[in-house]
Image 1 (tube, rainbow, N blue to C red):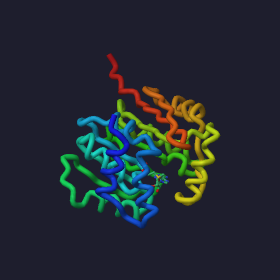
Image 2: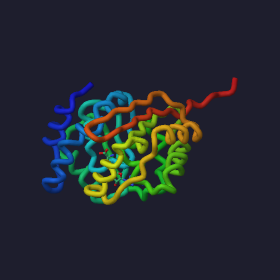
Image 3: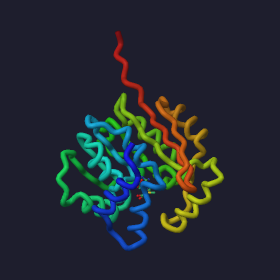
Image 4: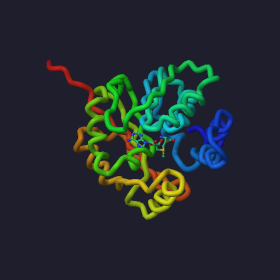
Length: 221
Ligand SMILES: C[S@@+](CC[C@H](N)C(=O)[O-])C[C@H]1O[C@@H](n2cnc3c(N)ncnc32)[C@H](O)[C@@H]1O
């Protein structure tokens, strides 16, 4: 797996919009979020859709280290979309890269074009009453056989309060983190199959990663 120092340095070379706090957040992101683990799921043949792409940092690492066919990032913040576009503006990538704004409720129809979808630390920012409908809608729009990488903070961990404090300080307000057991049950109920479950603690952040699959379509004999 790629090492965190390499990922951090790569982000720092290309970034950063905003002031010193943003630079710190960018530099330390690979040390507190398992970017290297997430990247290990992306192959050259993939078409990646990153939902809640922020300022495009995961997209940048995926473009540089995984070189999939295409990367599309969607975000609810117009400012972050502009940051993401600027992050790529002088690069020369084999990968086709696009970013677009979305309203946070209606997922675009082009979800169907993705072979792999990443939702990284986004679910806990979605209002509590919309979280399950977001996943249901995503499941319906994903193409059969596609993979969802759902990475978030485990709400069952006592350490979740550190994430709430982090979000309160830097992210606009505390989030709605699911316990791993509860979100796993919901994903199965929606129809996903579970390919991998990874739990990992990085400093005081307890993460889960679910690699979920929408079943390939079956053709009648
Ligand atoms: C903690 S940041 C994670 C950014 C990025 N995925 C990463 O891992 O670096 C959460 C992101 O989710 C976005 N967000 C919040 N609500 C959303 C929604 N309903 N749909 C998509 N993105 C959303 C925020 O604007 C923010 O960029």
